[in-house]
Image (cartoon, rainbow, N blue to C red):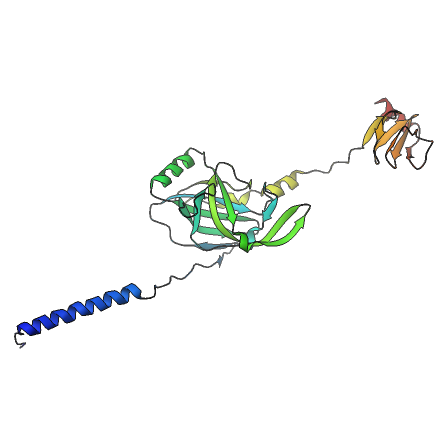
Length: 275
């Protein structure tokens, strides 16, 4: 049977309990934070890669293409399968307010030519305002921004730069984006992203519709003494078709072989001259 403690023993015990709690609080305050495991890429059966973190229950969400390998209006291409990121990625409005985003991207899926994301909007006044603009379709496009220090050039072709490796810095909602493929919709549970992977991206769509067209003849009409002619042009004179070997003015075809070269003899060329 425990004997009743004295007054001094009670005071000593209380001080010990207070000191023990103080030490435990200090240890908890200065203890190294427990690091959460960083999300990593997972390969899907369809060959695409995905990465995700949990979303807030009941959050307002949007989804669509944050970027693609198309050449954007700035004259460069961000190759989709060269993208890397760390979740969450800030969600901004027109690339403003990086330190105070209106939401965050919590899911990313990348393929060889496009990057699909899902994002959640913050539950505050700025998030409410952004959500109203999203619902009214005033904000309907995504725009993904790369971290400049991570850009690695794959090649430059006719003034167009291709970046083969880069990190996703942020994704913005905006009225019109630089990349024609980057559009989004409101996401509800059960929404499918398949449509965002089904259409051809802009560059490929344009190339798919290009048909073979015979080059137009750079025909400059009937030769006239007072006209200036450029090398490569064709003219008709005396019913024949002539090719300009060099720039000239006032040099009559048939008088200077180094200036005009006979392309089609009199006959068929007369029809062109009459037209």
